[in-house]
Image (cartoon, rainbow, N blue to C red; front, side, top):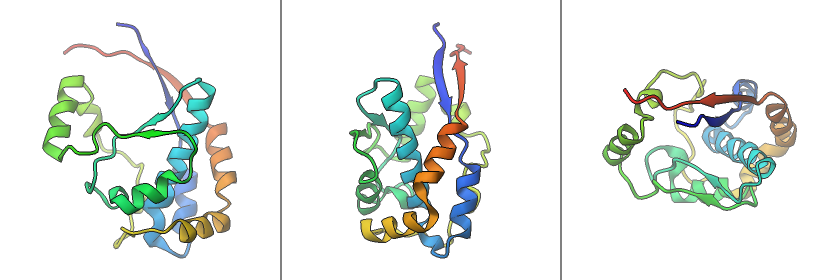
Length: 157
């Protein structure tokens, strides 16, 4: 079992900035765009040709077709979504098979303040306007400066 290099990006500071921004409805979309932009930079540094996400169409507000399209305009690398057509039951079953289920159900503080009524049809222009106000380039840079690299081994249980 060869350990897998895992790069963890701390998003706490950026999430606090999103909470301060006036249009809370855009929080999920802004967060996903930040994640993809950071992932793209990591992918480029690792000579990867794309970014893979766990998005499944319609599972959460950021995964409407409109929002996924708006989110993806923030990066140049291709975004691959192998789970796109799976429902929650199928994804859970697959997670159990590949050994990621236990990790996926652990409590996480990654979403500090999901909006009560998240935007499900964000437009690129509205999101870019928010990113300008938030200085998204700075948030991406700060997140990249604080990456942590771990070696994770899969242990059959």
